[in-house]
Image 1 (cartoon, helix red, strand yellow):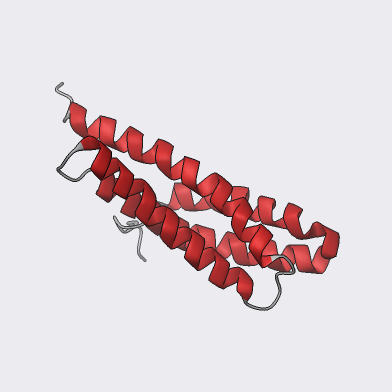
Image 2 (cartoon, one colour):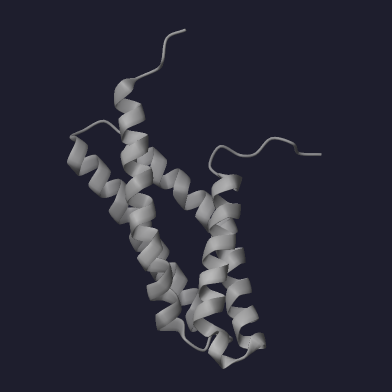
Length: 133
């Protein structure tokens, strides 16, 4: 039995994101009926759990790199945001989501500020260096 979570995956971020983003997409699509809202929310939640946990780690690693603060943090925000927006649009463009563009816009509205906060926190932590006991 595998008990160790791979270092490239953040399950807490994935679960939190799945609940938050799935709920948002359900609310956006609920006017099309419960089935359409549930389908859209389910796709969003599954995607966010698996890919969200991975993309948060991408953001963390990019924010921890050497280089100028603005360039590094800007990259750590832009790359995960772009990946997220493109992949979310592709997921919602598949059958089952009545409002793919609105679903994508809703997620992007939360993703960009979330990656911004995360990247700045990781960068600040990286600049402080390891704490001494």
